[in-house]
Image (cartoon, rainbow, N blue to C red; front, side, top):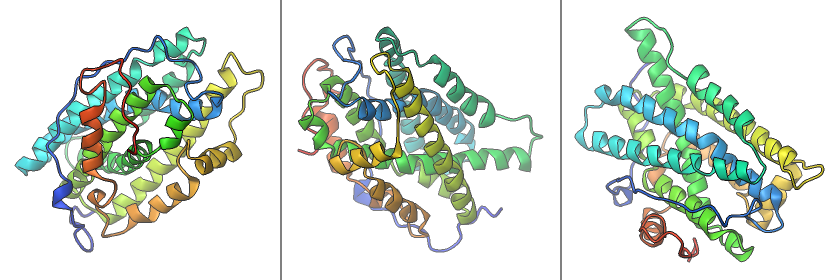
Length: 307
């Protein structure tokens, strides 16, 4: 697999880059109800899957990126990657802290998180490979997988920053602040994973192949996670998670629209794709400047995402 980018070099929008820093945050969960979107357990639990996937996933991001640092020969990119590592470590911790609260409310996530831990630590973890091409190949595969996943975390970050319907439904402000603080930082650093991949490898064939792997895994894990939550919710007699409910949530604006998810695929697979062409750094930075958790004002109500 060639490490020379195939086809035109994607163009970054310089104005969309901003220096990255990890923001120390804390959230108080005592007043957050089990169904933090009132009267809508399906939307609540579909979004709650983030708390199951992200702690292990983002710890894995950090682990992989620490291994790839010696391959970075651009000072600005190295600075961005170090900032990315700091932000992802904080994201992992913040979502991990939600899990004891869910368990306290009668929804023990341990059986599912154990499966997620196995995926990232074993299936996608370090392998006993001889030094040289084989070991580097596996590292580049994982760098490319992270770039594909980050396309979707940025997509979700942009969505939640503009999901005003969640505010209109009376969604819990602390949970919204967690999601929007995290989403804003995903938008803020959305170009780092892709630029790192292009710097150390850049193969279009690898980008397409690992996108297929990442997208399939995300769809599989998300549907399993939402089913797990609905079936184990102690307040529901026969909780079910269906594709029909997902489409309905998208149409109502409380979940990402299915059509938007589908349309995001050809954008990532375009040879001219660059993450800076998506979402708005200015909007992300503006939210971070008002987020109660990011500004140390936890307990206050955050501003509406799209305002």
